[in-house]
Image (cartoon, rainbow, N blue to C red; front, side, top):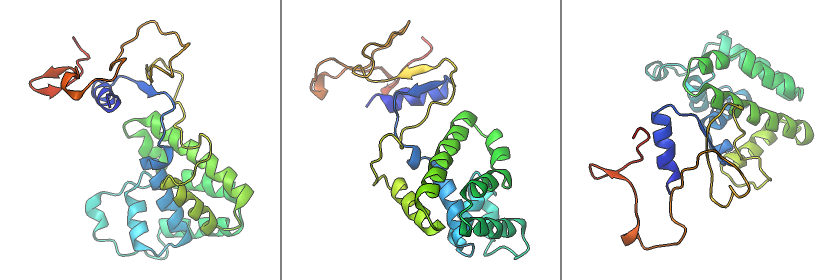
Length: 219
């Protein structure tokens, strides 16, 4: 229960950190944005998914512009790209498909101008690597891939560690992990949060300031 609070304050102070074997790759924002793009490739005339794509990292349209979009002209660059990607999916050119999604959209530009650049880049890389390999081995059309992808988003597939978030970089960071997982690991400085034995909420100790539960990273 302490981990979300610790994360919140580390983020607030811009302190880099990582969670040991943190799950949620396919429940991340990047996973859904990629799903919207693939869904638009399958059906470019689904206005709901089109609007989600335009709002996503791939294009980052202002929300105020989306309300006025009912469709895109047939010669619009995004429409032409979707048609080209559709052809690649029909030819089962999965590697070319994913490469074009990245290189011919505004994804990299938008990520580099966002916060948490490393996390976004590694999430997209990890998801695309998995989907590409799965598609090459198992899919004879985009519909099949999207069906499998949707199950991953719903967390209804247990397949090893595919939902574990990959480490971003080798830069020094605060490591957050359970006491059990830390057995045998050596750290120069350790902060321990929680109790060794279960106690009632009545006796639960925590840090407070102005009646709010806090973790003070300064003092």
